[in-house]
Image 1: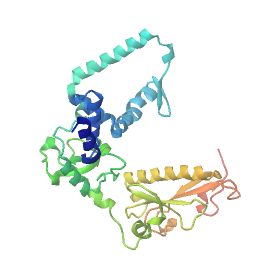
Image 2: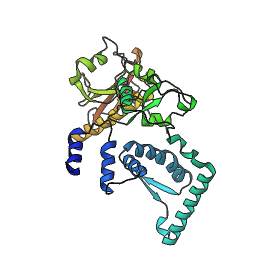
Image 3: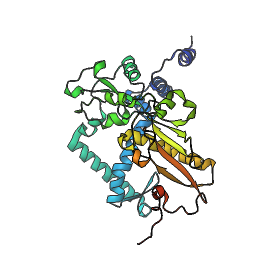
Length: 335
C-alpha cells in the first residue's frame, strides 16, 4: 500500500478523534515535507484553539487596552480595533527604535522574573489520558461544573480539585470539568470543589410550569443555551413578547448566580437582534421581571420579560415601566 493510500484510509475511515489534535498534527507534518518539531505542532494546535484567542482578547480589552487607552492616552479604541495615537507622525527609523525599546523592556522583565511570568499558563503535570478525560466530561454531561457552559460553546478541561502543587492525586475522585476560562481563573492553591454547582444547575421542581416546559413542551422553546431558554409569552403584551428563563428552578432574579444572568443576557441580546431583523416596526423594548407576589409574580420560577415597543402602541409612552403603579408614570421634569 502506498503512503498516500495508507494516510487516506487512516484519515477517512480509521481515525478516532476525541479532539482535533490528530488531523492538526498530520496537516503540520504534510505542510513541512513530513517533519515538524514539537513546538511547531504545538503552535499549529494553538492556532486552532479559539479559547486561546478568547483568553488573550480578554486581557487586551480588560487589562492592557484599558491602561494604554484610558489611563495613559497612548492608544484609542473603536469597536474591536486599537489605534496608536499619532502613529502617522513616526518615521520608519523611529518605529524601528521604539520596537527595539519595547523588546528591551520585555527582555529586562523576563530577566528579572524568569519563567514565573508564565507559570499560570502551565499545568505542571502530564496530560490526562483521553479515556479519563472522556469519563470526567461525561460525568459532568460535557458542561463546565462552575459556569455551566457546554463543550459545544467552549473547550472543557479536566481540573484537579485538590491541586497537584498541594499534593493532589491523579484520581477520578479528584477531577472536575471546568471550561478554559474558569480553569484559568482558578489558582493552583484553590481546592474548591465546583461539582456542587452542577447538581445545583440540574435542580428542577415537579409541577413548575417552566420546569415542565423543558421536558414536556419543548416545542415552545425558541432558543436555549446551557443554563437558560427562551419562549414566546403565552399572553403577550405586544407581538414578539419573549420570556427568558433559567433552566434551574430558582424563585426570582435575585437568586440567580452570575453565570445564569450571563446566559439570560446572551439569549436576550440574540432575540432582540432577531426580532428587529424580522420586524422593522419595533422601535424600542421594555425589559423587566416580577420578584415576589407583591410585585405581581404569579409563576415562582424566575423569568425575564422582553417586550417589543412600536411607535403609537400607546398614546404617550413617557415613563415606561413607571406605569406599573397607577398615576406614577408621568412626572414633572424638575431639572
